Length: 101
Image (cartoon, rainbow, N blue to C red):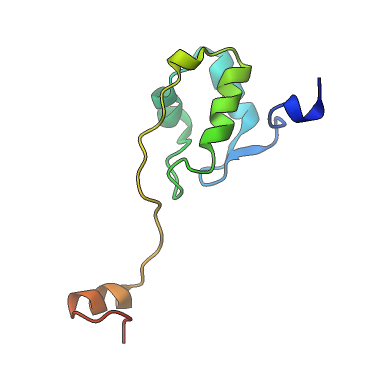
């Protein structure tokens, strides 16, 4: 096979937010857990700050490589990405200021 047709190496991190490796995900899928929602619960894949924006293409590819039919793969629920907000910014918002000053 062409080297570009091969999915992530076993040690590759698929979900950077939750540190889930390709090997862990493949192991779960080979063990019969092919439902995206179940995989999220078991591995926390897609539950990090990016909300699956980074890992979803790799998760989908691994599921495809492991023979999970496309019709059985449901997109995870999307949510806005998380980011840190300082207490000063929150206090300023409460006071009607925009930049925390």
